[in-house]
Length: 318
View 1 (tube, rainbow, N blue to C red):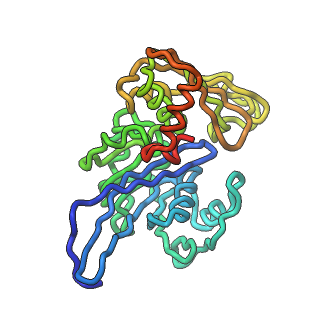
View 2: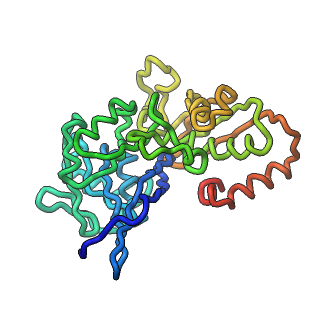
View 3: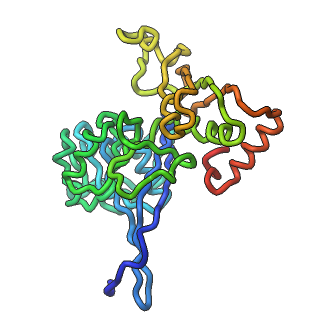
């Protein structure tokens, strides 16, 4: 490549991933750098590492490949060997067979001919992300969800970490809701939960136009990996131990509380509950709220439709 120089400030780059069956939305708020040369302009590809090759990790990789603007260069999972990774990625009971090539060669995973370095470290601090060229890490294990726990990825050379789950202390962001609050100095951020990503855009539109006084949300949620295939022990939540395929199971959800973190004006105003239902994919949220400003059914539909066509929420709401 000819000698280049950095032109302007790094620009924000946003990618929305839909991760199912948990129906979770994961956004990666990265930056790309534009380099200029008298004859050419170059845009460097964002290089991503994924920690955890379970449901979320695999669907993030699928979507990264389909989107084409990210390059996943490394995956870490201590519980899945390379041959099993190929099998798990190629065949998916929910999303179908991967339409591409998946193979192993010289200890690496090759997808559509591109090499992905594979690590098997239990301790994230030991993952040599920099050696693989991974700068931005998707923390998709569901285990390392605090700033301190997810922050150990930085020891391996990562620049930033996106947690694909709610976090007790990391800044939390939802596409179309509060991305303007993102600051470049943030190293660790959370993308909240699947239900929060569903609820927050709707709550924002209603609150911005009519002001929510209080509200109750109910999510009808697809089965997750934490549930039982048949009745089994679940000492903390007896009903949660019922067989997932044969029951509609009431459950708790922290989504309503999390909305207060991404929309501070709604903090403490929403509560909610969940029903786990025997479906493999797709969930739905029902929001009932009392509003300060009077509005007809037509008024509410009109503002939601308008918002769904706006640059901020197009493709997210509706």
